[in-house]
Image 1 (cartoon, rainbow, N blue to C red):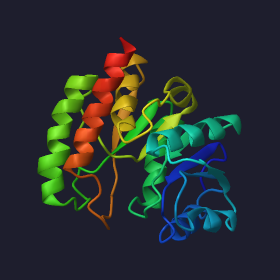
Image 2 (cartoon, helix red, strand yellow):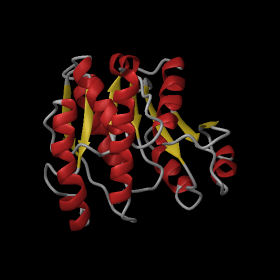
Image 3 (spheres, one colour):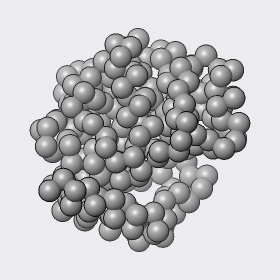
Image 4 (cartoon, one colour):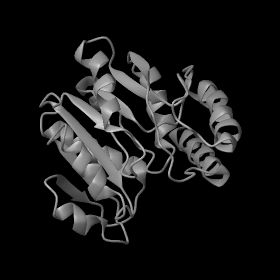
Length: 224
């Protein structure tokens, strides 16, 4: 079992087919699980209410970034020392959580970022890898100043310090880039950790990438 101060935060939207199986696997390693249902249109929230987890609900669909911030704030209020961001679609592997939290428990870093490309265990569709994810690395390096092997993996572990300093204001998928930028701004020690993602669906496509760019540039404009 994980340390009792480790909490797992899961954003969920229309995941009735996957959420129960994901939760049952996570309950084998922790009872500190909070799931934020982002106004699902299916039976996701009904299923959550039958499971021994903390279930929160957005009454309007705000986006994954907003759900992560809601879940992170709740975990901190419960005394979390380490917070795991974990997806509801069943593609992330529970076994990888242990190596994500170890560097934080050993006070080596403030935040661990999952990477699909350190040892290439994840069978990422080649079009997604070379036409979406790899070009995104160049953009993220320019935007955040961080040189990473994988800039858009949602699997991450945050220390209490990192979770308190990082505030997600990008409600949608642009939150991943925003988190990296805040790592730089707050001078947080970070490390990439190899994780395995088992793809069931293609996931983010070109149109989604352009929406992220739009959201980030709009945020920059309004900050000024």
